[in-house]
Length: 313
Image (cartoon, rainbow, N blue to C red; front, side, top):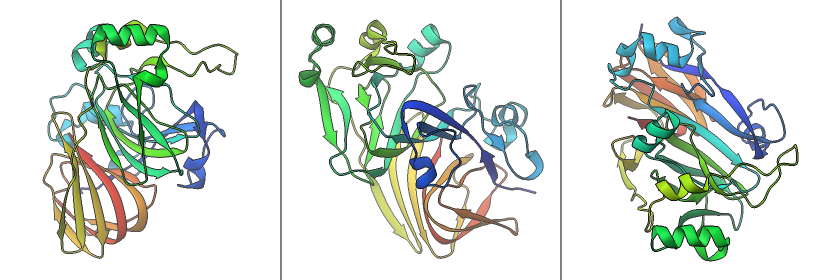
């Protein structure tokens, strides 16, 4: 019987994390500095476990390796995407991610192109999105001199904003922001600047200046332009489509019948509650639910009031 794959997933404690994964989404968190919930992940640093049905108890990386038929017979050697929710109770480091070629050569894993949907943002919250350097030489010089105010591009954000963050983009998520991130399945981050923060042991966190300069893109980041259509009880916003992933927001208000149009999809419910019916079986879903619709789910019906971020390779 075809069925959605619901998941039990891993929390990650971070120096900049907070408690809103508990207060906003009702998750159990390991500490008051919980920064990330790797909601749909087959990355070795935080693998999700299937929580229901025929494959209950199986790790997602193992399921992907053994049942490639559930994932459109994907040729990717690893499950290609990772969905996480971040709670930034303080600034994340200013950082950059490599592309696939650099990541595989130097780190033994994929690079990281990612994108952010802003779930919530405090008044005055902002991100760093790009830089002002006109050349790699400028960039190296400004980093060496610590000219952060002149170098970093600050952008104000609000709930509902979306940012496409290709590999090579200098970026940082600011204090008071929660985002849902869709990314390539990679955990390689090069820190450029960390506000001279100490960790719990009183040490400065490691920086990766040369790698950052190697992989940084010169020029303004190219954000995507959302496109929205309304069909019956559903509003579909397409945020971005590129060789790594396509990301949508699906807003459901009532009953909506759907047919599969991608080999498989990753779904995260960010607001509301309702249900999904597959092969005559009804599954309740609500804010904080995350699941995969694998290839054998050909059609399904949503009912209720739901706001979801949906992605597929």
